[in-house]
Length: 236
Image (cartoon, rainbow, N blue to C red):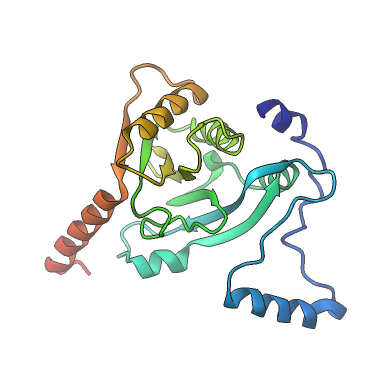
């Protein structure tokens, strides 16, 4: 699958407006009506174009950015995360990716998320709530390469764990960058071990690289404990 991605990397890279284009004036009313209908249920699913190479799952790119030190909440996080767009084929992926800024060039407290369509990159999402994530902390300068290798492995189904993979995140911070891959079932140790081993291979990590697995339940508890302390101390 990697060879297929590499061969198609520059294919139609200039034609990336499939999901981002504004409707023509004559079609605007029809577009608004369709958008309203889809929003009442869920976003209309994307499909591969004629002659394109379909992925096993559809995926969505998301982006979030916040000001460090500003009090956060689940509600403010959900409002701050923005969906960039969805894709269903190798070609559609490259159209998005070739025009996106690389993680190493992001500034501030920013995150890119790539998740299966229909799964929000939030701990509380039904697909995520019983799961967890493998976390790798990177020194500055490595995020762009590691992110690309990670998402190509994910899209190419290299993890071989069925439907367990939910998505991946790259988090740009001031002193370090963090990448993580999320799965559905934290209690399935055989699956989490296979994800860890595949992650080591596709990222070509040194043997002494520290990898941490954290359940989303633990993440939620740590977040609540921290914000409870902040609020109790008048830090709101």
